[in-house]
Length: 310
Image (cartoon, rainbow, N blue to C red; front, side, top):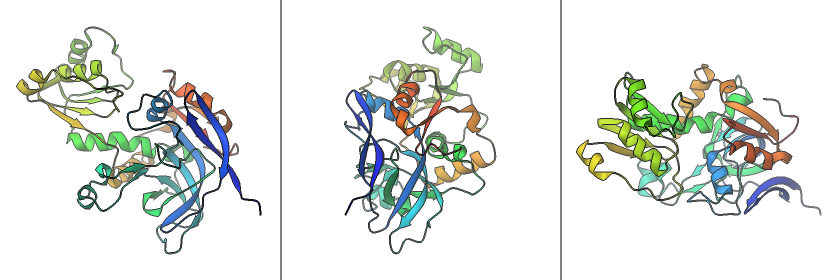
């Protein structure tokens, strides 16, 4: 008897390949999903270059994934075959004190789908616990659905920062009118805001940007670290202490962040056409990774089936 095979991506040192593998079968409380489209994340490109602190090579990428439910294990009732779904990729244990206190994104035994886990969404099929899936509303396009996971990260970061309404906010690592490499970037940001920043989101998390963020923050301000650091960072701790600056880490997301992201995309508050800059087929995944890390793209998507239309 011939075992059914599928295509999947493997990222190794100096190589990003499409290989064949057995199609996985859902176990207890799991769902089998047929992938439609996945995004290339900064975490993916960092890992491919050996710069991600928590992902070891080789690995199976694809945590920004949208697909269609193919089969469900007995007893699964939250999703059904034919449902379009996106993945909340953190895989908590549900037993530790973080999980039992509603902070499963900080699970003490956390695994992460598509990031060092045995499966990822850059494959024709994958299996995952049913409680990690969010059903995509019928009226949402695939382009919108593909942004739910990446949008949930900043939504979570803003939630942690507190109410930012009416506050001066700076974001490091997004489109900006100020040259981040300029020696007087802190002065320029303060001038552009007309004041110091109440909240600074650092989406890069290298030592120069962390120091810039602290310099931009006002006394009593908050610096939220959203990016994944590729190395240790030293801080001007005297300034942090004397200016009473709060440094807040932001780790992935929770279910309410996914729900809010879906709402933001449904209402048009976030437009895919302003974010998605390239779409490539699975067989061109190496090109997709290269494009994503080039600095010329915002969001690169990979379609699993060449007939997929966003």
